[in-house]
Length: 373
Ligand SMILES: *Cc1c(COP(=O)(O)O)cnc(C)c1O
Image (tube, rainbow, N blue to C red; front, side, top):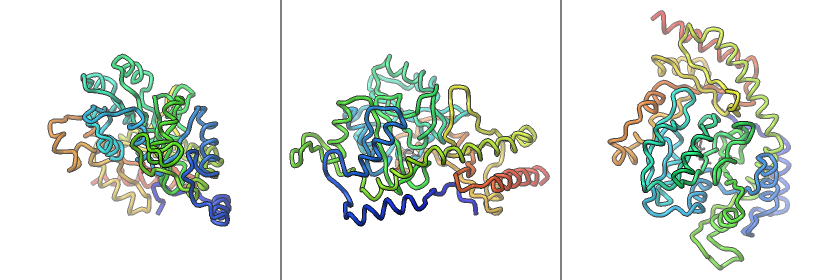
């Protein structure tokens, strides 16, 4: 089976993790964290060209901390897509906010700015665009609208490390940007996350929030929790940061090859393939296609052929039991269409060119069979 994603871990990570164990420096509750935490943050800072990186122990924690740092109040409305991993919405609820679901565009699965505009109310405080699958959202338009209505922008860049918009890294446009280092993401620590910002004040707050609201120790000044990234995880993340360009290069090679193979017949098969634009460059976290008709049987055939094709995301968040009650009136036609028609294919660094060939051929033969039957 070619899995949908698989961490790219080698001897360098093993060496760095071993050194943490040998030093028994497993974690540090110091304000700036332990040595690996600081090393990782500084590497990510240069990569993103941003002033501050504050690491935490998950992408969910990053979103939660960002919402607290932005000063969210009980009942504040937070605009976000429903077509995302549920963590985006859960973090909003945990922080006391009210999620307001915005529809997406069928062409790239990111926030539909016209629907965002329609859903802004007097209670709106924050907007969270999600750069889903590594596709940058329409950041300029979202920021312009946010500015006009005094909303903070918190980017959910959990899937988009390495993606860029007008040559600038995603996650660096908003008041705050959130990243995840979960095992499936382009850069992993097993579990981990980071919040990035250019604001000194917000960075100070984030360091308090990840450490029980303390500054010097035992002096809690605001609500915080233990959201610290352990040194073992930071050691992995640090090495991964050094390999990021290489990993993204292989993803790009695979994605471009897959596009070439599928494009030759995409009209015939009515499959929509993901396309970059002059302004939007992808990290190719997931290679997601959409079919005009029957998706689930295509997926099952691919899985039978040992291609780990996976549906992200169905159901969309507003249809999940915890959210469906409050969102029963919510109509998100593009979101609902995409949840029923998209399929993600593996292009991660373990996927070889021969694998890409196999993926493309399996897909074509599956669709042919479908059309005949
Ligand atoms: C992975 C992910 C998260 C949450 O990150 P974790 O590290 O799993 O907590 C949030 N939003 C999106 C879009 C994600 O893909």
